[in-house]
Length: 138
Image (cartoon, rainbow, N blue to C red; front, side):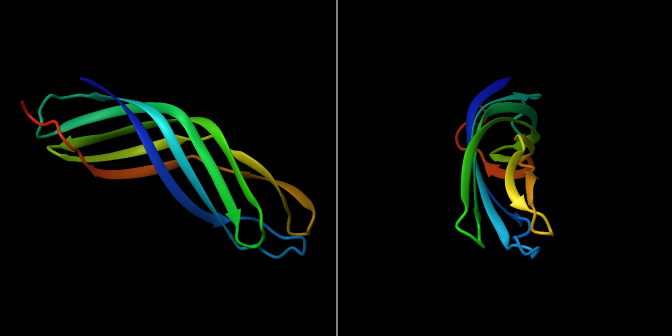
């Protein structure tokens, strides 16, 4: 059985953001990403008590970040994808996802205060536990 869907999600991440012009470590940068993906899941069993699945999706990831040491706020959108696998047991769903989001590059400073380009990896793993509403054995 194949299920088509739409995934809308928000993730928040805090990370080290680089060095300032004096070579001192800057505070943590807080980043957020939202995703809007068309998805497809293939179920490998019709047994409602336990149904393993695997799926994939593709769409838009919106990225935004703010540096706590300055007024720098950046945002953008990137096309990305996702693969996932898991199982459903009656009305409960458990899954593991890997989100493929392209890297971001931005201007910063190195330890000597010299201008430098930094690259931020945006891909991430997600562990999901949820409840299925509706459906059930017929």
